[in-house]
Image (cartoon, rainbow, N blue to C red; front, top):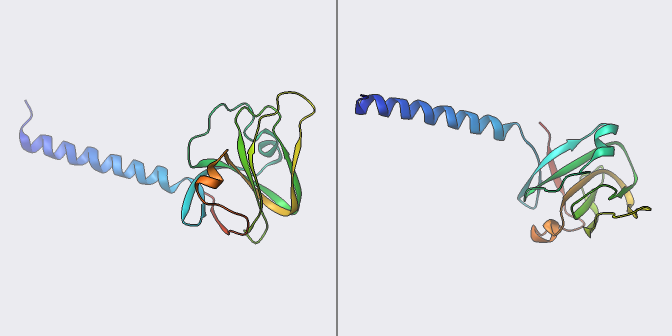
Length: 149
């Protein structure tokens, strides 16, 4: 049978291992910060990842999303083909300023699917759950900090 001291030492070791794992996981996540609010993001920076985006996903956790990173600024158009969840689409320019937000974009149920344009040159697009931009107080003109890991 284990003595109190041995149980204590084992408990400390387990706690240290858990804290190390938690720190590693949190330090290796990409995120955006807007108005002091953090959103964990998956990065889509290759043509294949940008095309696939959030297609076929039936769930996106709160305060998370996908950040699309393009090589150059341009008028960008997104659509919801094969996207199963409603989203807010946030267009961000090369200076990290939000230039347009399109809220509560619904999945496309049949072709042809509507396109949603940035109207202004953008280099980044952040997709989050519908209503998340309003809930977090995100608005056009806000600045975004991106940490990619």
